[in-house]
Image 1 (cartoon, rainbow over the protein chains, first blue to last red):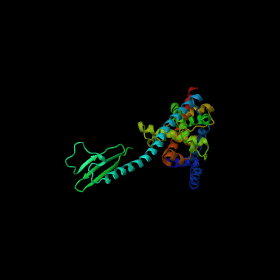
Image 2: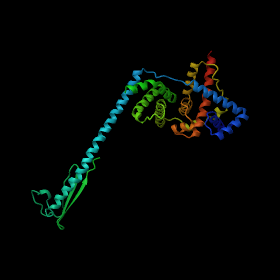
Image 3: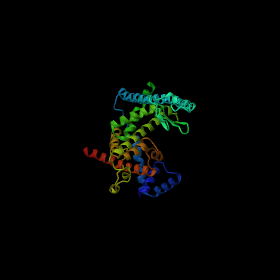
Image 4: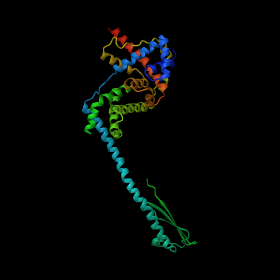
Length: 168
Length: 179
């Protein structure tokens, strides 16, 4: 009997073969005494294991066993609350910033464009006048928006770069 | 949580026994069965009643144990399970004495002997035997749960049974020798 047949015989004993294969194995078992003996041995062992399966019991008291589970559940719940709390606050903040950032940027740009000839937007007149304001850059950092203003005197144009700071 | 505590109390021995049949270590079986209960609490909303609570809970316990074994296998220098799938050439030549369940030992003693023999199987073989013989899982289900092919399930199961038969016969012979 080769190993492949032993495995199929075992599957037959365990009822795991399709009907065609099962019929083929049954026919062999009928003719082959060795196969019949192996099938019988496999059934005996399987029956032995099923009816005498070790059934160990929890070697701890009910209260002690449960207390460790309860602690685990409470720890897991606290962890989940921390994550949920952060998650539920962040979307509100993000929604608020999503409106604030472009709105603030648009207002800032509008003020600049309303004063195209003013090289010092927003009244940012330096104490000591800069001799030539050609191609001058002004940086106005903020927590939410980064902006860089560039005035090209030749073209009488103020260009403002706005960037949203990605804080996440 | 009082109701859940009652559920734990009712089913704790069965879940512990299932974990023990796979890992064969008291401390680990305790930890893993408790971990399974914590997971069950977290997933209790997904239990739809399609199967019995015991079946659902047993599946969680088995999965927790298998995850534990997979984690451990990565850190330990154990022989790869596939290497243990096929019996030794030498062992295959030895005559195998299959035990007669109605003969010899008493019921309680027999349980102890089976437990000892199970403890001497490799982790991979013990898992397949526990899932098939004690849990009644079909080959395909075992293959899916453990993440191996049906052919490997068949090989492991055959080898494990053969080894168990040898071990049980040996244990019975030892006992006779002591008398």
